[in-house]
Length: 283
Image (cartoon, rainbow, N blue to C red; front, side):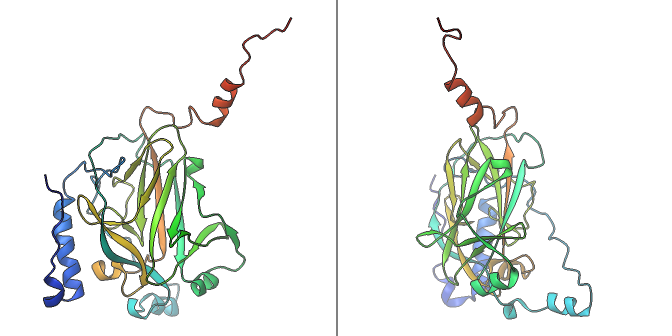
């Protein structure tokens, strides 16, 4: 089967940017309605709840906060994530039964331009590009340019500095001796179907010890649209949904596999077996 997704080369001349985006997602929605599609080395296409309602809107404590929440997206400062050029990124079929409906662990990374990060944090300390999450089951980070984006920790949260117009990827490494499933969100939207994120949706499978690099929004069976740092007004959340309330955050939820202990062959037990003595009593 030819999995190449056709692109409307003529649309850019006769339709506006939003109309082109809507056309793409009409085609994309049809393709991704097929359950069980999986990422290259274990990625599942969305087969969970793809019709979840958007989260409740922001509630201001007073008139000033309500006015701030109502500020048009085009007037908001800082970064969000846009819908970039399409890249080749094939999927394949696989199967995975979760150990439980709730994730084994979750994590989040907040991002903005440098001035935005300075405004959002008081005291902050430099952090490594990859950091552990979900009790150490995975480690993850944001890659942009030639390496990992500058990362900080402040008041228990993690912040990454981005640059307008630059592409980025989400990198997740499985530290377990068993497969895990990771559900990822950007700006409150699931990276698989571009709709409001939910734990019920399916994600990417990562084999033991493997590293997954998610380069963009899933746009077809074998393509993604690159993640790009953009203005809030030009963000995918605003362009597709007209709702930019959750821009600036990337989410991760990790699920273990049913009937498998992800910690069974982690470091401690392996080292004990390597150090076992063949003759317990010396002569």
